[in-house]
Image 1 (cartoon, rainbow, N blue to C red):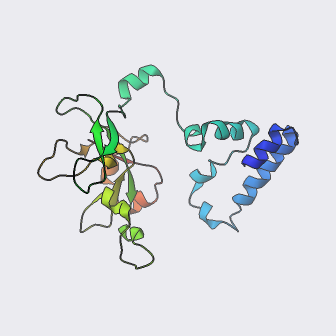
Image 2 (tube, one colour; image 1 turned 90 degrees about the horizontal axis):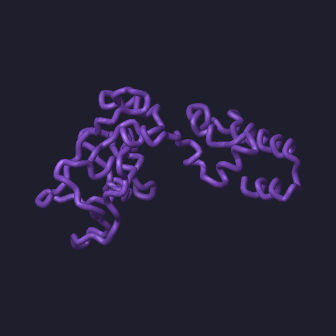
Image 3 (cartoon, rainbow, N blue to C red; image 1 turned 30 degrees about the vertical axis):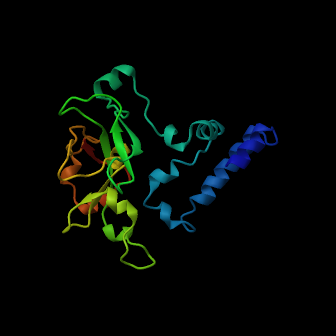
Length: 205
């Protein structure tokens, strides 16, 4: 994509020719006969631009930002949650590595940070293929139950918070913020979660 963008920027291709190249590339990438992986993942295909404007937008802002919904300041004041209450740093706990530190004074019971959760419905997918049993480091940052295959992994800086059974100064609770589709996913089955590729569950710390 970057090479094609450079060709267009240098006027080596007309806009019509460039649009034709983009459409042919997308059709080839999404050819279900060659790439059956796309069949159950329609959201992934949306990340591939089909216009000059879309390609320029991805080039300058990044694919993840082009998918974000733009909200007004009034909406953010009412619904937004602060993400910079904590910062990463070297942990004061021996052998803990990195940790999270408050950037300002926080009242007891106030929100430290939200944590949208990546749901993994089969924890065995985190086993190293080399040994078949060695667990990947990611497992250390996820929440689960010994009798369930489901893992919930924070996707924000909440994952930097070190756990301590003796000196806890924060608590984790289900967020009151509903999913964007308005559904309460806490009652969803593993099968329902397996078909979802967006973070539907959220913790508040």
